[in-house]
Image (cartoon, rainbow, N blue to C red; front, side):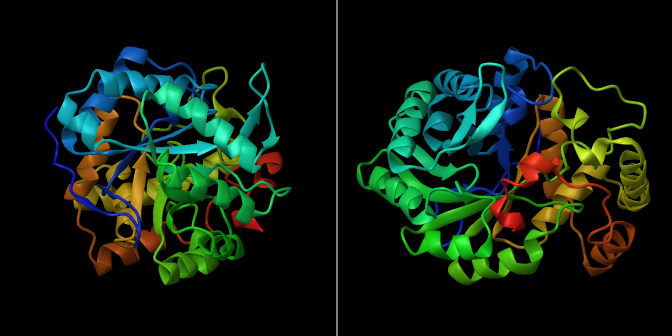
Length: 339
């Protein structure tokens, strides 16, 4: 696969030197139907070969499957690429045997327990960035971050991160331990981060790793109005993919497509390039499950958006124009960033 080499930059003021695009690996194990294991590993290898060093996962993605998959991919990658790879791990989600979610656990003892299992599954002696997936409302964030700080002191973790945290929580967390980055959904159709959260992360020198940059494929240019989703696909329950919401949102994509045709780039590349253009402190996470989609996403680095382009994109997909919340109501309730 011949693609544009991916450059690197320091993630936040205190974080590691990471690629300007990261690979979100969740879809290789969960929530979007079955994935091809061999193609998933080949995609991770292709990402590393292209210069993508940041591999994002969660210990609850496939109940450990995703970490095992990444561990296998790293073991079978060339040593130089393996040494440059950075693992970004989310923890804390509580699961049932049937695959349901029952809450989050941010207690210090639980944090260290989760880390021990992640290190074993990944086959590494440290995690590069460690973060609770959702803030546990029953445990002060200071206690959760304090446990991560102890893991850093012991050498098991290199950097602390946050996920879907609100402005006040970010400040409290950063008072305990330096925070490398905040992982949060950010895309043309998910822009809640801009109002109160981005100003705080920029004040504190905290980077952003933006997931959902294609809104789970909704604004990729590949999702069609008549598409049938596979059993277990998260999008079958996502408000933005339901009925009139879907029709409205794909209408936004139609408007965006007019701009992409003028630029000679795909819808996905424009959408990723737009996120990247919002600041050098933002690293888009691309959720490619195949080498083909990976190559398309990396091609966003060849797209330059000038002021006129950005204005045209804003007219096509204005802030707040998407129909439907980004998660079902029960999951929205877990988002500290939405409070």
